[in-house]
Length: 205
Image (cartoon, rainbow, N blue to C red; front, side, top):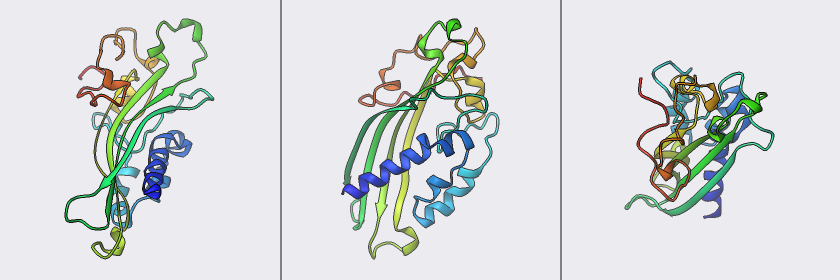
């Protein structure tokens, strides 16, 4: 059971926290952790270039928009992992439910001009399930870690960057754009004890 938890943690790190994914936009570290069959399925998604209006922001991996930098302390994470048997009738399958929030605190050389913490701290809220498969019920290429169903939402982000699949701080928005966190009270944006909000923190186009 401990190894199942460890595999889920490694996947979260590789997709959401690893500098290679965040700044170099390189998802090979995450792909290497997956079962061969899912790796083959997801590689086109993981390596696809973001396209405006078809945001992959809420999927894997999280990528920081070019030109922005995080504070030296790095992202902060909070959440829970809960392991349980997989689908009924699927021997050799263990699942881990991950419920977490990540706060990305951005550096800004113009600190004196900031008026709200939401301008520099962006939040990513995620619920997802990882499954580890082994044993004779599965083909060899199916053994290992799978990313199953999940949902996510973000708040206090640069909306233009998010529309192209990248993470940028709230201060990237023009003054007329309200930041999530100022007027949205859903606690699920910041606390994994609550359901993931159904709306992301940017106005609809």
